[in-house]
Amino acid sequence: MEIPSGDGVIAVSNRLQGRIFCAIDGMLIHRFDSALAEAPSHDKFNNIGGNSLWPGPEGGDYAFNYLPGTEWLVQPAINSKESVSISLPDYGATIGKDLPLRNRKGMEIELHFRRHVQSLDTSRIASDYSLRTLGYRTLDMLHPKNSYPTEKMLFCAWSLEQFPGGDQVMAFGRMRGDAADGINTKYYGDPGKRLESERNCFRLRLGGEERFQIGISHEAGPELIGAYDRERSLLVIRKTWPQEGLYFNIADNEQPGGPFSAADSFSIFNGGNLGFYELETIAPLQLGPGNTCGPSLLWSETIIMQGTRNKLVSCFEKHFKMPGSFLA
Image 1 (tube, rainbow, N blue to C red):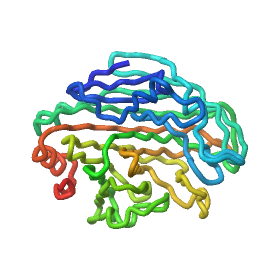
Image 2: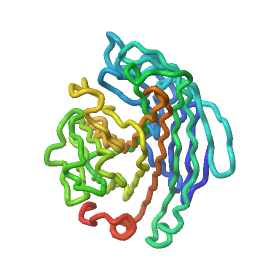
Image 3: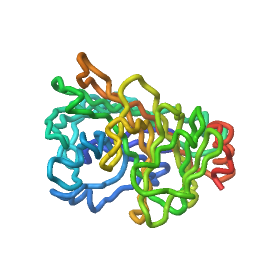
Image 4: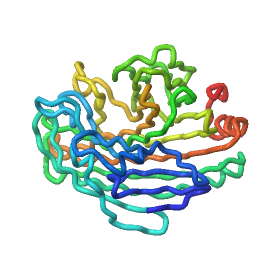
């Protein structure tokens, strides 16, 4: 399904589990593994790319990616099950599927997943800065079919947007508070000197051989994350909105401090030698009666801009209120 947007198109694929891919003037923006899409694996993770839904947490006692007695895995409901179209209005698309899942505690859950995608109007940015643009907004919803107590089950909607690139990419973010206090580096790997902060902003030089990931705490009031791809003259901005609800640790590790040792609403993953990166948005879990699991609703927004470096820097500084030096 194709949704026009600015100078490009937003493609939503049921066959590829509800992933989203974007192109500007015919050039694919997202990472896409065409060989794997054509011949997906039956027992390994089909890391095809695009913008996909992931149920958090990945690790810890409540993990969906570690079942009792198993190594890391991706369950079939996420890895291979196709979505179906629910409605196709002129301005967007709504798709969905049911997700039978288990967690590391052995609890079984069935979630109703719905993804609504609609185009964003980026014409003002395009005209003010002479850029090629597109934008879209998603609402990812996970609704539990039955009542599940939070002492046995935690889940959240988690959008992973994947792009090709590494050494030529600078990631960044902005928050209301001091950036140095709002960054969580306890996923795995250490970005070291690749990570720098300046008042309420930070930048993160991607690439290299090592994989690492950072999170941005929802308590720090994060306002946006993004990346500048120097080689493709591409600027990507992602946003999500703060919500009331239960944020918890989603990290792919043992989470020795427990499920509430972190509470991030954004994350950035550096794939290292894999040659891609991810800009991620994370929703809280809403609570039902008696500390049961309610739904998890994730609003996200992606704006993609392409043009000369000078025009991108001007837009970065004036429209998004970020230091132009970050795009050096």
